[in-house]
Length: 334
Image (cartoon, rainbow, N blue to C red; front, side):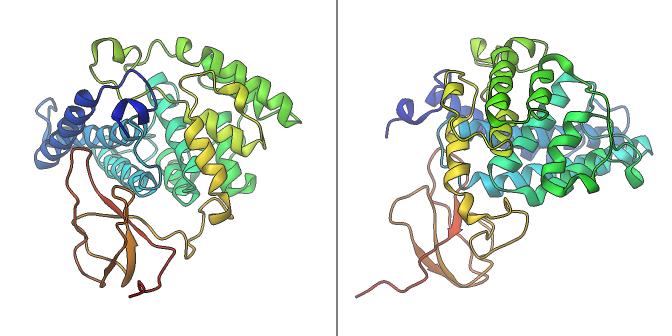
């Protein structure tokens, strides 16, 4: 399939995509090697570097989805994103001396938007097991900063249960998120659908103040425009027919469809490991379990690996190769 046929937004060109992936990899390597020079101290420099790495990894995942890459490998990549923000969080708390400093500000529109996108991805990729780790970035010591935002608490309660979350009466970023909050208060899926539609109608326009808005015009920093939180709401609120939302370019319809089609593999949304929920393994790392593995990056790729054997890369311009445990563990017939 040609690139222009598989990409999920028409703003993304193939040359830009390939170059942007390379630039992101270089940025991750550079910031991982030394503290950022913009910091007044080494401690602050490392904090800035780790934040840059985490942002690059998040944007890289979004970019791959935008380019039409297979969805399954993104499940493992999302965990890399969360781990990178955990690393940044530890450095942030060292720098500030305050573990009640939240990793994503609830009152900064860029950070609030990114937080909800990450949470949305956890639901859509059936990685609810990552949500307690996201909560730990925001809750402070002994829940000191729990309950800062109603929408955050409401969505998180769908993963861990309301008894494990905090009461809240405020919505920190009403614009554009108030209609989405309303959807979670509706009594029927049809009413919820109307409010999700209302939310998406204003989503891009109301986020004009973010750093990524209109990035496609100059092809500088564009990695895709996606309301993953709207997709998660469709799943959580029992909306079966989301076709009326497909008119919005930034509604992740392919990811929502994948999540619904694969729900049987993850009865609890991926909250607990199952035999069908083994982590994807990036190329260059040891095989965690002897057996048959395959990669969506290449057809007819099923291969037998022994535990400890290095998983190979298939090369190409589109980034890392991820290997998945094959549902078929039988030896090929002769």
